[in-house]
Image 1: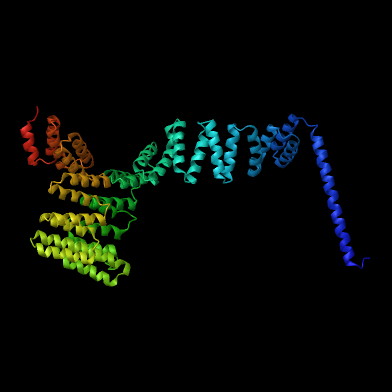
Image 2 (image 1 turned 135 degrees about the vertical axis):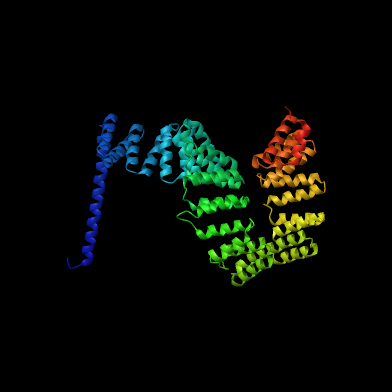
Length: 545
């Protein structure tokens, strides 16, 4: 028999199956005897047993005992709560969720159960279910700060921004201390900023600055919003504040230099460029390039050329350097040399850079066209404009300069056509709309002029000149209250501009508000003592004393 391997294998299999069945029968009878023995344990004793196991950190024993007892008594909620606690303590979140759902079916409005379930769903990344149970909590208790904070963060993760904002607003009402609302204000500001609601975002970031004035991350966000709103004075103020907090930060200097340059405040730009050169860590090439640009537009073109050629190791493959050098020659009225610089760069340029260089040539030629026009060489000027368009037929500045030239010779139809083309090519530039308004003003077409000034303001609310011109048209239509509002807005943007203040004084006078008119005329003369019209009008009105 033992020489038969197949028979031996069959006997072994039989023995294994028999052993398995014997053990299963014993286990079932053991379970029955266990459950039977649990009947002798009172609910109070069961609670004490599980609490003792948990206290001794014997969670496995606590969980086995509680599970078996609950098979016998499923409605024993207090024991099930202890079991949930043990599962949570041992990070068995899914088991805890199962038993919490049973508890919740018996106690659907219990805040604590809903909150526990929401947190567990959040921890297991079941965010939609977590949101559902946090909402249950908030319906029962609209002052539950934890639930509101957590659901708001989940709404953010799920990109439900409107729901997040609604919850954050509830939170701000539920939290009494302003200091504890700072992070909420920042989150609300972030949402509004991403939605393009710049003014609302700014309001909440400003609130977040409470006891947090030196938060550079927050200040950078605020500066970005001011940039979007084109509020240059505020950009400068915040940039200077950042510089005070981090005086060695080169990027802050660079931002200020470029901002002052764009505002044509060249003295200030040069002041900060000079300071930036003293920093231990700086990009000297960037600073020198900025200084060269400043010199280019302050009548020191030869110095700009010197910096580029002698101090910056001129590289004709560097597009910014080429542009700076070419424009320096252009401002020095060396137009031919400026074009040669660009042509030389084209020879060494990558194909993608060629259109940009041609655009620079186009701008230079249009500058030359303006210069020729000023010299009275009208035919030659228009030839230059035509040549400029051959290099780049989509350069809005060329059309803008053409509009200016045509307006000067009273060729208004062409001027309007040129200006509209500039707008088509660069619809975000408010200056083009303002200039089109100026042309319509020449034609005494106030309806179209007003329309264009209004468009300029909508594109750039910080365009003081457009506000002023819009106000002047309002005054001519006897809308004095509207005109005063427009001129006041213009002054809030450019308060030291004597012409804006003079126009406001004139409107006050037309509106019969002579005292206010006198005040404004005096302010005009404080800014510009030689302002003849202000002097004459004040003399006519008298001092009022």
